[in-house]
Length: 155
Picture 1 (cartoon, helix red, strand yellow):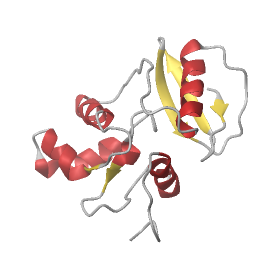
Picture 2 (tube, helix red, strand yellow):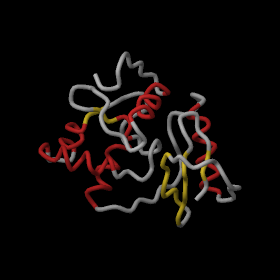
Picture 3 (spheres, helix red, strand yellow):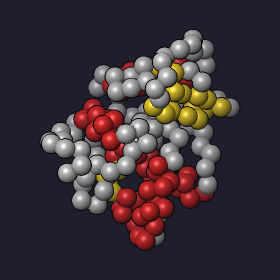
Protein backbone atom coordinates (compact mmCIF):
# COMPACT_ATOMS: atom_id res chain seq x y z
CA UNK A 1 0.00 0.00 0.00
CA UNK A 2 1.58 3.27 -1.08
CA UNK A 3 2.06 6.11 1.37
CA UNK A 4 1.76 9.63 0.00
CA UNK A 5 2.47 13.09 1.38
CA UNK A 6 -0.27 15.53 2.33
CA UNK A 7 0.07 18.92 4.03
CA UNK A 8 -1.65 17.56 7.13
CA UNK A 9 0.13 14.21 7.37
CA UNK A 10 1.11 11.24 5.29
CA UNK A 11 -1.69 9.09 3.88
CA UNK A 12 -1.78 5.37 3.11
CA UNK A 13 -3.94 4.54 0.09
CA UNK A 14 -4.94 1.27 -1.51
CA UNK A 15 -7.26 -0.03 -4.16
CA UNK A 16 -9.03 -3.28 -4.79
CA UNK A 17 -10.85 -4.42 -7.91
CA UNK A 18 -10.43 -1.03 -9.60
CA UNK A 19 -11.83 0.94 -6.64
CA UNK A 20 -10.27 3.04 -3.91
CA UNK A 21 -10.57 0.87 -0.80
CA UNK A 22 -8.53 2.67 1.84
CA UNK A 23 -7.34 6.16 2.63
CA UNK A 24 -5.97 6.63 6.14
CA UNK A 25 -3.46 8.89 7.83
CA UNK A 26 -0.24 7.17 8.87
CA UNK A 27 3.10 7.89 10.52
CA UNK A 28 4.84 5.94 7.76
CA UNK A 29 7.01 7.84 5.30
CA UNK A 30 5.96 8.28 1.66
CA UNK A 31 7.25 5.44 -0.47
CA UNK A 32 6.95 3.59 -3.70
CA UNK A 33 5.95 4.34 -7.23
CA UNK A 34 2.23 4.36 -7.89
CA UNK A 35 1.18 2.65 -11.11
CA UNK A 36 -2.48 1.93 -10.27
CA UNK A 37 -4.74 4.36 -12.20
CA UNK A 38 -7.29 4.70 -9.38
CA UNK A 39 -4.51 5.59 -6.93
CA UNK A 40 -2.88 7.99 -9.37
CA UNK A 41 -6.22 9.75 -9.80
CA UNK A 42 -6.72 9.79 -6.03
CA UNK A 43 -3.31 11.42 -5.49
CA UNK A 44 -4.05 14.07 -8.14
CA UNK A 45 -7.49 14.83 -6.71
CA UNK A 46 -6.14 15.06 -3.15
CA UNK A 47 -3.46 17.51 -4.31
CA UNK A 48 -6.16 19.62 -5.99
CA UNK A 49 -8.31 19.46 -2.82
CA UNK A 50 -5.48 20.65 -0.57
CA UNK A 51 -4.66 23.43 -3.07
CA UNK A 52 -8.28 24.62 -2.89
CA UNK A 53 -8.98 23.64 -6.50
CA UNK A 54 -11.30 20.66 -5.89
CA UNK A 55 -14.54 20.40 -3.93
CA UNK A 56 -15.87 17.07 -5.20
CA UNK A 57 -13.95 13.81 -5.54
CA UNK A 58 -14.57 11.55 -8.49
CA UNK A 59 -13.21 8.04 -8.26
CA UNK A 60 -14.72 4.59 -7.84
CA UNK A 61 -14.96 3.58 -4.19
CA UNK A 62 -15.18 0.05 -2.87
CA UNK A 63 -16.61 -0.29 0.61
CA UNK A 64 -16.61 -3.28 2.91
CA UNK A 65 -18.27 -3.02 6.28
CA UNK A 66 -21.74 -3.94 7.43
CA UNK A 67 -24.95 -2.81 5.78
CA UNK A 68 -25.44 -0.25 8.57
CA UNK A 69 -21.90 1.11 8.20
CA UNK A 70 -22.34 1.48 4.43
CA UNK A 71 -25.65 3.32 4.96
CA UNK A 72 -23.92 5.72 7.37
CA UNK A 73 -20.97 6.22 5.01
CA UNK A 74 -23.31 6.94 2.09
CA UNK A 75 -25.09 9.54 4.23
CA UNK A 76 -21.71 11.08 5.11
CA UNK A 77 -20.83 11.16 1.40
CA UNK A 78 -23.83 13.48 0.82
CA UNK A 79 -22.47 16.25 3.08
CA UNK A 80 -21.46 19.07 0.71
CA UNK A 81 -18.01 20.66 0.68
CA UNK A 82 -17.79 23.46 3.22
CA UNK A 83 -20.82 22.29 5.20
CA UNK A 84 -21.17 20.24 8.35
CA UNK A 85 -23.78 18.12 10.05
CA UNK A 86 -24.07 16.25 13.35
CA UNK A 87 -24.15 12.63 14.41
CA UNK A 88 -27.73 13.21 15.57
CA UNK A 89 -28.84 14.51 12.17
CA UNK A 90 -27.31 11.51 10.43
CA UNK A 91 -29.07 9.11 12.80
CA UNK A 92 -32.34 10.98 12.15
CA UNK A 93 -31.85 10.73 8.37
CA UNK A 94 -31.36 6.99 8.80
CA UNK A 95 -34.68 6.84 10.63
CA UNK A 96 -33.26 6.02 14.05
CA UNK A 97 -32.54 9.10 16.21
CA UNK A 98 -31.46 6.86 19.11
CA UNK A 99 -28.62 5.37 17.05
CA UNK A 100 -26.22 8.26 17.64
CA UNK A 101 -23.53 6.05 19.21
CA UNK A 102 -23.86 3.45 16.45
CA UNK A 103 -23.55 6.20 13.85
CA UNK A 104 -20.45 7.49 15.64
CA UNK A 105 -18.94 4.00 15.67
CA UNK A 106 -19.66 3.55 11.96
CA UNK A 107 -18.12 6.92 11.17
CA UNK A 108 -15.09 5.97 13.26
CA UNK A 109 -14.67 2.88 11.08
CA UNK A 110 -14.72 4.89 7.82
CA UNK A 111 -11.98 3.32 5.65
CA UNK A 112 -11.75 6.23 3.19
CA UNK A 113 -11.03 9.41 5.14
CA UNK A 114 -11.26 12.80 3.40
CA UNK A 115 -13.04 11.32 0.35
CA UNK A 116 -15.94 10.10 2.52
CA UNK A 117 -15.93 13.34 4.51
CA UNK A 118 -16.55 12.22 8.08
CA UNK A 119 -14.51 15.27 9.15
CA UNK A 120 -17.69 17.24 8.32
CA UNK A 121 -19.58 15.54 11.17
CA UNK A 122 -19.61 17.48 14.44
CA UNK A 123 -21.05 17.01 17.89
CA UNK A 124 -24.59 18.21 18.55
CA UNK A 125 -23.25 21.51 19.93
CA UNK A 126 -20.97 22.08 16.93
CA UNK A 127 -17.81 20.93 18.70
CA UNK A 128 -15.11 18.94 17.00
CA UNK A 129 -15.49 15.41 18.30
CA UNK A 130 -13.85 12.18 17.25
CA UNK A 131 -11.89 11.65 14.07
CA UNK A 132 -9.82 8.62 13.12
CA UNK A 133 -7.13 10.96 11.77
CA UNK A 134 -7.03 13.02 14.98
CA UNK A 135 -8.85 16.22 15.90
CA UNK A 136 -6.05 18.47 14.62
CA UNK A 137 -6.44 16.95 11.17
CA UNK A 138 -10.22 17.22 11.38
CA UNK A 139 -9.85 20.91 12.15
CA UNK A 140 -7.32 21.34 9.31
CA UNK A 141 -9.62 19.63 6.80
CA UNK A 142 -12.52 21.85 7.81
CA UNK A 143 -10.27 24.89 7.45
CA UNK A 144 -9.34 23.75 3.92
CA UNK A 145 -13.08 23.91 3.28
CA UNK A 146 -13.46 27.43 4.67
CA UNK A 147 -14.30 26.91 8.36
CA UNK A 148 -12.44 29.17 10.77
CA UNK A 149 -12.30 27.69 14.27
CA UNK A 150 -11.18 29.84 17.16
CA UNK A 151 -9.46 28.67 20.31
CA UNK A 152 -9.25 25.13 21.57
CA UNK A 153 -10.23 22.07 19.63
CA UNK A 154 -12.13 20.99 22.73
CA UNK A 155 -14.41 23.99 23.32
